Length: 129
Image (cartoon, rainbow, N blue to C red):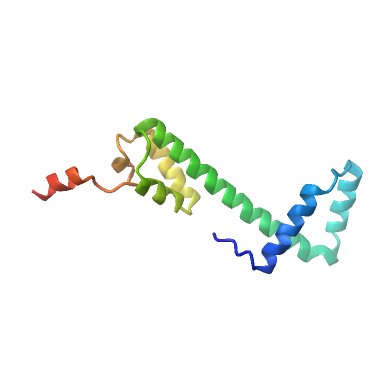
């Protein structure tokens, strides 16, 4: 997902994040009052906006964490991966697909076995004969 800085909803999220990050910590009472206010009908759109961005950012975080884990596991098992493999992994957008690769790395004998690297030149040359 590409976040467009000119997008109004992104600007609102950025403002909300700055306010929440740099405002003084809320006491339990202030937090309770804030949550009560957010439950009011007039704040419905704010709640939806906030939840939508929480969901998006959570997904982005999960994808990045799984990509990083997969790259670390590949490096530990096979050595540093070629740029092509890093490029392919960085572009995976499905948690399920990443999970499949995270399982495959446990039993694979090579990156080719995992299905994320094409045949090497020597393998391709030997199959062309």
